[in-house]
Image 1: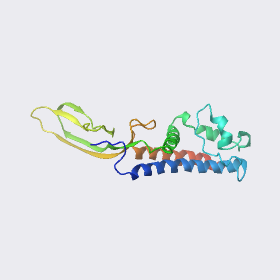
Image 2: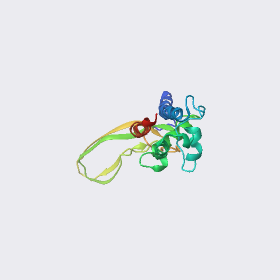
Image 3: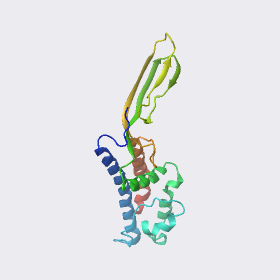
Image 4: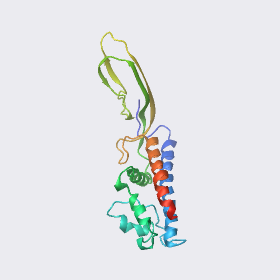
Length: 204
């Protein structure tokens, strides 16, 4: 399987970049609604409001620009926003990845490659081997074997597996290296819809 620095279809990076931007912008629209609640309509930080995705050392200092002054926030909003920061872990790390991917994609194409493997099914009915490695999934290097095995002499084998080429973030990517794009973006959207919006909706 050939691996390219970009997928053969030039539209794919644009579509992936659009998905990344839309997810980040959904958070920023939510943040603007919170800024209006804190500072009025329009808020004083209209030009700088954004959903805060920060390191622990910069969260408090940036909050006035992102949402509004802490002292003006309704009770519980500060704790809700701080509790959604990626540095807490527990699945929230994908929000940090989204922020980095969005910033990265503003300056160049998303770092994705064609020629990655997904194996939705793998069934061994009968197999006797002295060596077996694979199937390899994720980003696949050019010319790399997907599945290697050495059968025992004179033995029969019954093996069936399905290999699907897909799109992944390049192994050299500073974010989500080697991960398949679609499942990774799904995990980001799941966190936004299941955790971020329900947590902050009461403050709108």
